[in-house]
Length: 612
Image 1 (tube, rainbow, N blue to C red):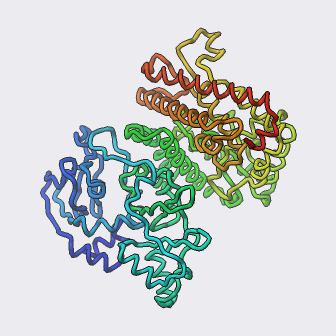
Image 2: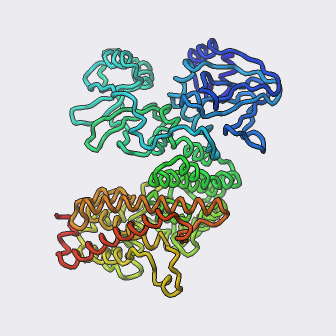
Image 3: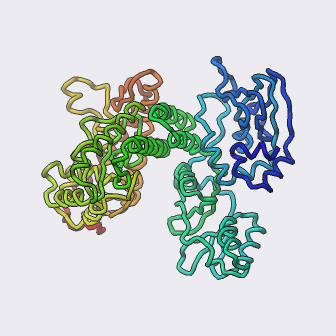
């Protein structure tokens, strides 16, 4: 039994002692064709099942499907883990398609496996987006909701022996270490094996010699999706959660995320990252809209939905670059920094979003080779189009000369925008690059970043940027609507969402925040000279409302076979949603008027420097 389990994930990453324990606790059962092996919609699972021979059919909805099972497993297939780990009746129903032999692994011996990195990776590959139906478990949105216990904390001067005793007494595979400077370190079971035992050090060795310092941490309030990605991408066995004051709030493990909405997003992200061909990548990328439907059905807030969509979109772009550059060995991927721009750069992606991009090249890339890179980037953009994402042929894309430059060329261009923001679309380009977020290669654009960090010192440019930002007025009817006598539609992006985005971008620059998202920028600038705390809170609230209405409308369009659009037919909205949009526009307009008045009657140097 141990040999069989060792051949199949997640058991293939388990040590011999753990395998032996699992094997001893397992029981083998035989089922005739048509027999029901389990029905986790009726009762929570008490064990995990592994198929040893034969085929097992799985249904992921309580009502079943007229088209047949949702999944068929053969030898090595594992089922029952969702119900087991959530303790909820969430399915699946498993039936023997033919004579089946399966082993039943009890919950108490298999649950610790899913608290490990191997278990998290298995879950990331196996969790799927469920179709609408019954039995959806309660889910969580932020990493705070995953914290279960008070963190175990020690200090650098304590011995490894003392640390190990605390870890044993508290039943924790880690100890958070706080040094004299307030920095956060971490020592884990893995560290004890790899850095102490393997190095031949004794148990009286100070913890400070073997701990990880600084440890990777995540800020309280971070979406669960981001936190799980941090664990998977860096191979972490646990992740401390800290508040804005730097205090440790708790520690989360890979297995804590099984019931989080991140599960479905990470699953799709992992499927995308493992695609071995362009066709496979396109197929998996086409599932992105259904991820959004699933998240919306689960009642997730709009900002979490857009963050998760951005994470999956980033994975699609990265894998597209992987596959395309592999076909062009003459091009060096290490010399490229790919930047997400626009809504995806701000992690505010919706179904109608154009996937804007730019590229910054290392100085070693010769000018004559940049054209070859741009042709390859056009192939990446074609993959994204085939996956159902929107690429504006006349917009900002890495295949165009304007958006493919070396680091130094970007720096020179940024400085020219500061000197004359009205020339060569300087303000528009500056707005795009301020929202830029590197998703491939070097952190990127160091020269541009340095220029924008000093933007507040250019009061004239800041005033011009503010005027440009406030020129996009929030309104219920555009001039085009008036001339066309259309009073029943609203372009929710242009007439409501974009004015908030522009305000947030400007106030973010004024307080030098590193936040790129609209909500984060507004929070960072709350109480600054041109944005009161009340105004900031109101704008965050209306932005969330507008995004929720926007996403819900686009999902309805998708389900009706229509192309998702930002032009909303007000007659298709509920009276409540129409009222909310009208109220949101009034709130945004009031803030715009206040900022405009203050900019005319105060010294630009005062608010540009962020003084109260």
